[in-house]
Length: 513
Image 1 (tube, rainbow, N blue to C red):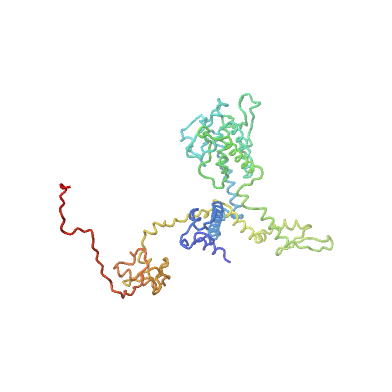
Image 2: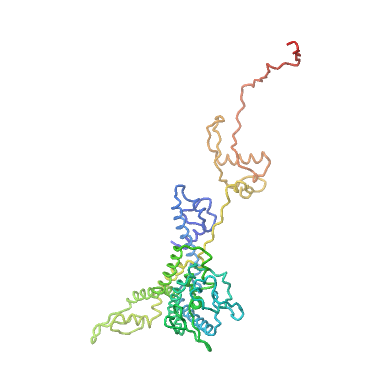
């Protein structure tokens, strides 16, 4: 059975077969919840209807993505996004770009021209002209503890356009936690991409507990040595520098809890904690979500692109398939040996694991051929598992006209099948059955449904009687065959009012009373 054809048919109908309605098969797109519930049985509960709709929506999107994948799976741009073989070269180029971006950002940091705005690309700091002391309203809680702290920040991106984090992100305690966590992220991500010499992660770190020059400050301090100056980054300035580095070098939106391979736009920034009254429970929930997300990345998480290559799965599949190419050879002097079964290869080894290692290193074409199916399966799964993959956004189905609109709209001549001057119908019109009395029945019945031929004859007769086009006909009323005349003569009746005084009226003289 060809699943691609089945998927295409489902898309043409706009929804899956179990929920297809007779009057809606010409509409395309994902049904809204309201449209979907109109196709369900009357006894379905709201909870069950919601579950069915979510299943239908997931199935529709999955089917649409399968069709899109079949149409574009051989194109290089899609392979560069999801195919494990193409991703190896993509990761190599990505790492080179990250190392270049890190080097440029550190040079700007040393020279004092680093733009700490939320944008992906740094603007020209000299053109900005916007200098601030770095202590905004949302950082007042931290400013109360570090009143002498001042930061030179040049921003070219408007903060009002950037998405805002939870107001608790501006609290002093939260800032200290975020500094420690972002430092750990910088170290791990730099190691994954081969970035060395980053002073933010490997430079001089001091702690103010034993440094009298920074009395009153807490948390780590990063020493930045420029050409002519030496500066210590701490507090908000250090956190904003780390956030900028993670965003522009690694595509990490720390407060947004995302790590993107194609990061763009603006990252999340700290919100004004005075702007919104938030409960302790909501603050605790947000902090727990933020910490758990990044702790998982620090402990067990992998680079998103590296994870898509599924190297462990491919290697396991290759070893399983290559076992058949390990041959056992009897040697008179050394006993049993193990040979390579690849075509034209006569290598001999002491153990099977050495043969497998030899095959993986020297016979890459054979390994690629044996793992081709596994790689194609991983390619498909990588695409299907990406919620933001191209081709995964469904088109919402257009609303059908309401009942009142359908009643007011008269059918056209083409819809009714009228052609030329014959004023006849070429197709049957799905109308309610018209009842006519059986021969010899009275006006009260019994009645039977009229045959299609009688209905069409009645409608033609009504249209010709009134001298109007069939396209202007309104709802049809039942028409009955003519009845024979009553043979009894009609008796003419008259009515006389006995209280009628007649033409003459006698005058009464009330004076005599």
